Length: 135
Image (cartoon, rainbow, N blue to C red; front, side):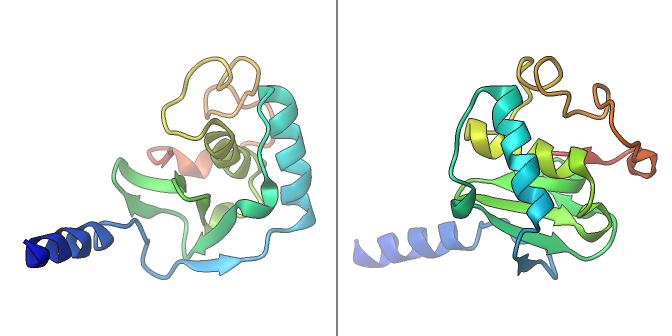
């Protein structure tokens, strides 16, 4: 019985999402400003200090839903493709997942309230990302 438990725990540990080449970064002052904006538009609160940000080399990376430019993971982890580290849309989209504590894109707050989807964003365009997802 003990061996079975150890195998189960080992298998679960091997399922963690970790894109190749991801490295932890210290968030910039802009990220703190974006966090405040995202809390304001969503009416949700969270602890910015708990969030670990990771940069993934390149313009996109494989994730369970396809090719992504950003991804939120439970455990307060946000992954951003290097090309999109300065994208307010991508970073704030993932921050909103963190504040909501889950995936999916309920509207509101995604879209109405917080225009943080490709279709609703009114800020600077990132059209290079056509065909990839922010998850």
